[in-house]
Image (cartoon, rainbow, N blue to C red; front, side, top):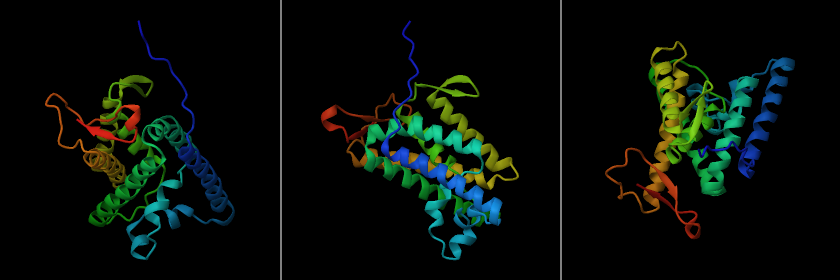
Length: 229
């Protein structure tokens, strides 16, 4: 029986900077909150009120502040394990383009939802990046095994579970407005992959038997080209 072995990927350059930045900002935020009662998420998290006051930078800064140590550790592992695979596959430039698209797209989606609901809740946390990475991984490697609450599931089903949970929270949870930021991350990641697929020239070639979007790397001589089928 040929069973896949578990391997820890090398932490790639962009993801190394991300993980270090998240750790430093978490410590700084904790110190500011404990010693001076200054909330960095209030100033650098994303809210419609903040953006309306001219704090456009919130569209970039909001995912770099973790809510707690558990979120920091979990999302740092997602960035390390999944993000490193994607950075190796796409290269640094394309990987950064993906992350920025997810961050900004999710932020705009959230601002729209907040404007409609009038909730006035601040969105922040690296889970936005983590969810976008999970969707990309599930699209690229749908049959790989991932673990949901210690239960092995295929990556495609893992992503569907995450989307279903966010959608449920968005509709039924008292703080469901935050879940719309997560749904924005999924939508932005999907849109980026479709756009890159069409840009690479494969947008019109979809196999009739294909039931999901798949972006795959071609032969090594064309490493940066992605096809859509």
